Image (cartoon, rainbow, N blue to C red; front, side):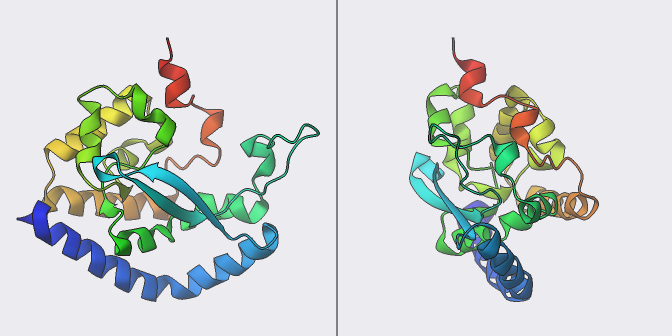
Length: 203
């Protein structure tokens, strides 16, 4: 019953009231990033959601669009703005995803929505992560986040799906709040410590 009905109801209510409570912070960060990113405070990208259906994720834009002499985007570390670094460190860049939750594209808790290009590189068991809505936070995020190797990270996603329950979601939500408060396991530039999944698993 929780998986089929109450989880979605809880997602909607918490996202709705969360946006109301966080609206002053939302507006403040949006204005700051508007000026830092030449009028572009938001970042949009297609991600695979439940049943691998694509949706457009929305986050605060923490990097500018500066390019090299050949027209290629500079590395992430060189495009990260000062305010963008602060927004990432405090996890404020995730706030706009509450809009995705309201729309039904995402859940508060679930496997993080990863890149489309990763889809061919999952094992059959790892594809279980796409049988539920992706989440703003999840079991992998409270167990190391970007500091965890891909195999272990995806195994946490499978474990979450196989044991989906209100008790587990409540535990993950509680641990997420604690980790955000102490800024634990937050990596400003994930590419500096780990490869992309497709690069790691290419033969």
